[in-house]
Length: 164
Image (cartoon, rainbow, N blue to C red; front, side):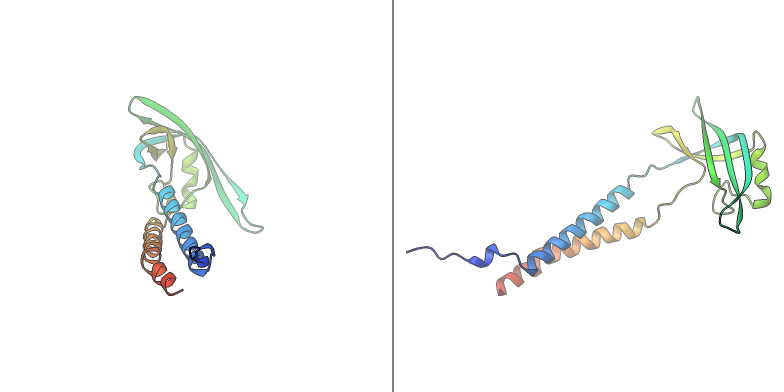
């Protein structure tokens, strides 16, 4: 007499599809959270402008904005590093913020700046901390997705398959 084989185990149905989708979402959320948490913690030091240039450019068809290009230097320990920056200068929310009418001060050699640098690689610097934002959101999404995937795979999926 032949053994009875359950043909239902070979079929992939909605329960298995939902399990794969939830596990994929959890893996994606954890990956995004892990990549976002790898940003270096920047230290601050004093720097100064070596060379600066401010020019008016067309940002849109009618909007004229001042674009800043500057070369700056800063010291970390006994080493002096030189770097450059180009872009639209912020008016607030930065230790280097200046109103638009004061941007010409950046053309003066020796103008003081606050420089952010990576302590593990001091030649990697920035004048403005770029907030990636959403760290709490990424962390919450990762925890929620993993919790939902565990709940489904550990409780709901076995109960669903037992009924089928």
